[in-house]
Image (tube, rainbow, N blue to C red; front, side, top):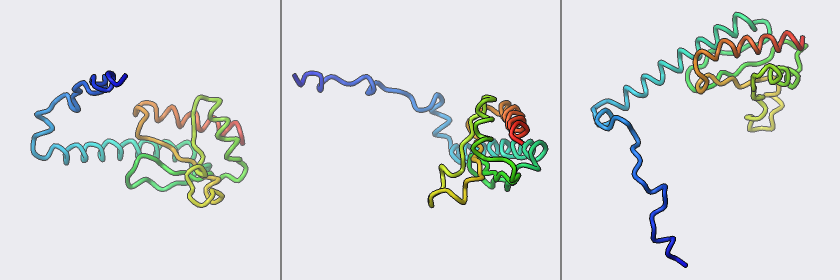
Length: 141
């Protein structure tokens, strides 16, 4: 009955954590990795921010992120209901996350905020995402 506990599970097979082990052992590799990530995400944040300003400057307000993986934008156009905008964006294939989902105090002060991720999507998807958001905003105005 306990024989299955003695045989190694499939997950115990050796799996390399890096395809280039010598690169990991080179001095300074982690610092170079961190700097590369900072440069990459800063560029993505600029691309997203510039596109949002160009297309939605009268709808959204935000500060350029100084780090991280998200841009937090506030819907400043009082005629736009955030829930309606999120649904309209979803109908255009753009999934948005309402800021209230991340508020530690219940969310009311974050009702008009959106968390816009720029880290996980391929860079070439950021501009079309802003196009979709702009079209959704036009739909609900």
